[in-house]
Length: 637
Image (tube, rainbow, N blue to C red):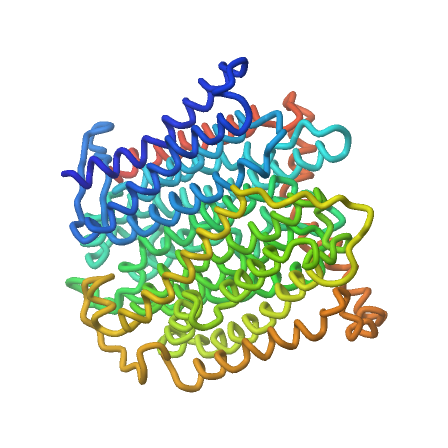
């Protein structure tokens, strides 16, 4: 029962913090509520305690405790504690605390900090509300609350004058519409589950999944399950910004109406910590059912279908390729960091596509470790923006001479992000590759090869970005401000996370049977040749190539420009490709037909505000009503 109380506290504390932020905003005449002091109060009293409580739950995660209460007639809601919910809670709360600490400096002087902290905490609270839920309806409502908070975070700088303010508004609407599409698909999948299995409770659904479902639209039991899996998987992929509708965080450089219009800490918070991980949590929650290799009770129909996992794998690969293109061509530092963070999310999805227990374990570990590495990289580039107040990477160079500490932390961040041994991301990425190699899902070997190539290219792409910032001649036009202590503390803590976790994984002989017993309470013998190498060929290739790519990038961009690649950049074909990418290729067409044209049509009949918030709230309310009515009337209680 103590763990249940801790879970309730960690859920409610961010919501209480949001109210505290509003209260402090009324005390602006007092020193205790002004500027940094007000932000420090929220970090110390809300974010840090929430992180500590979630870490305490680690010792209770194997209890699988739950609590129910009656919410509506025949509809029980409650919370559950297991390895998955505790793992996500630790990720969300710990990184939220670090990004909250970093935000103190990044937003110093911002006149709208009350809204920032209110919706930051609402988003965090909504995520916790969802991941601890034992019911699909509650889970959906929690993610809806988080998405609504994310909408206002994306629109944080909507009051900027002129075209910039309009772009921020369009970016927020873009975010809302794509999330709305994902919600619709999830609603249909949840309604089908309620109709087919007569339950929305996770624990009951685990047992009901192997029984014969009520056939939907005359389909067989196998097709009924496949239909549910497709809606859940595609909706989850959209919520996590995966291909083909990956573009609530990214757009063309010329269009410039994406998540890059939000503050840098918010883009990292949404992609690496909260909303970008919604789809991962949903599929992980359904993983024991979707990956079940057994037979249906009574009729003996095979439960496993590889189609959803093939969709997950190829969507992840397509997203990784898109992110690489963005990192290579984008000039906005925020957009580059969004692409880098989204790449790690996609790599995590690849682990899930393996449909085996090693892939599931690799998903959890790369989510926790890769997200931390992405945040570390983001904070480093955030320090650049903080020092110069310049977001265009083409206008930044030579910071190595001005800030040696930035150079040291930058190189460590790059090594952590790309998975250099013995950083923790090396082990989680190695486990992902091994899970794909041993997978029975068709095309997994192709995905493995593409993932290895993509990872190698990523090393060069992010390394190039850092070299451009550090090397070359300093632009005399800018006055460089010293890096502040809050930013340094945030960065060092995240790097300690990735470094310390790597040594822990070595000590426990990852991923041997002892490692599995401690995490999943299962004694699995994977047959690894050596504890830190999953496969002599794959592991040794990556161990050898990563230092070579880093050294080659350092050599090529030691001048800060990369003159060796000038002929390639000046090639006419290269310029055409870059121009097409900057204009968003087909992606802006998707934005045009799914967002801009519907907005123009609706604006003829609805008086919209600048950000169309009332219309968005109406749509969200209708959405919630539809799912509630559909579930109650289909017998899904």
